Length: 529
Image 1 (cartoon, rainbow, N blue to C red):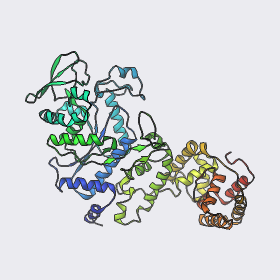
Image 2 (image 1 turned 180 degrees about the horizontal axis):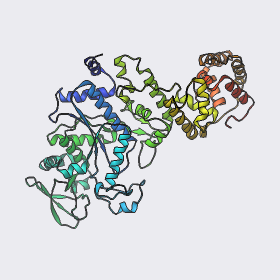
Image 3 (image 1 turned 45 degrees about the horizontal axis):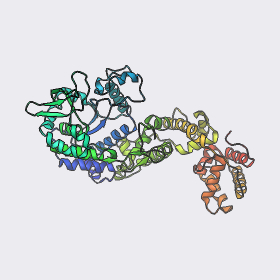
Image 4 (image 1 turned 90 degrees about the horizontal axis):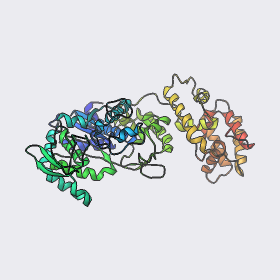
């Protein structure tokens, strides 16, 4: 299929990244911007380390960027912008040498010593962590530092525009503030030449022609300073607007908690003479209890935790789905996301071009999903680990190599990774919650018959044959709802309320092994041992 044909299909694609990309294309009217490219931006506050929200924002923005590139030849760039000139407001709980940081509260992050001792400043340390973080996932981006933009003069013209439109900015901001804050609020935050602290002080005089302001310190002294050259920075919302104006940002998404900030910054951007970027407001993640995830509370799931139990691609699959819908981000979502991701990859090649553009696999891999897809699901590996009480991947491989002839950890790398994830997940989350029960009533006779059927099957019977036997036994023993029969097997044999397709599990675990497992359950033995 030609590039022209694919572009036509992309123009009609319904996946949300294409919908967002069409907003950008409509903004441009099909013409290349004066700056020569379309600018996508993501923001990062380097007072803390990169986290799962950082990953999600860069990933989703990249998906929109790639969708745009399917529809247009206009060059694109993605800036990962660090607000590293922001003053250090409090000492983070998760860093060393906190006493050292406490001595530098209020200073720009790039003027605060690095508590880790690896960089010239705390801001530079976290910036390096951000770049290493993004590089590890293969993101294509350009890192930009607020400190460098302010001090190099790149923001000078935009800062002078803020000064010339000072009253307009104030008229936008003041109604959003409390009464006390209104009395002293100014969009400009001077950097004290004596202490290096970012000051929140009243501005008493404006000199737009000279490019200066006069502010009043706490001791009553009035000081004149230029607003350019890094001698002042802006308050958060005016700063965001000024950045859009200075850089010509065309697209930036943000969380629902910044909805009001987007509106105010958009008004300020217009007051400066620019059009604010196209925006997608994404919903925030929820924890196990349905509460909003908070970095300070530590609820929810971290990047490191997800990647301990599953692949980055499974997390990308989670991020792709319904960004405007609030979703629980907790350990129990991992197995489903892993299996959904591989299901999308597995079905990709057989789909029509239009369907491929709707697939998460296209957006996760920019149209080139991998070919190495595990022949077993994460869920069934979890159940195998469960019945084996596995502590080591080699235990599972003993069964896998029989089920998938010729399979080894060396020639099935994707499967080997999945096995390792499954063992870790089982040990940490499944094993502590397992609760077996004894069979009761007609369950006893049903299990006896199932055991007998398995014993009489040929060694090479496949999963479909085993599934048929399970189904027929359930019908023969008149379970009102076959789900009750399946649930009974899960609770009695696996110690859990849900489980795999039993035929597939039996084929993987083995007919004789399953028969022995049923026998032990009928005798009342401890299956958790």
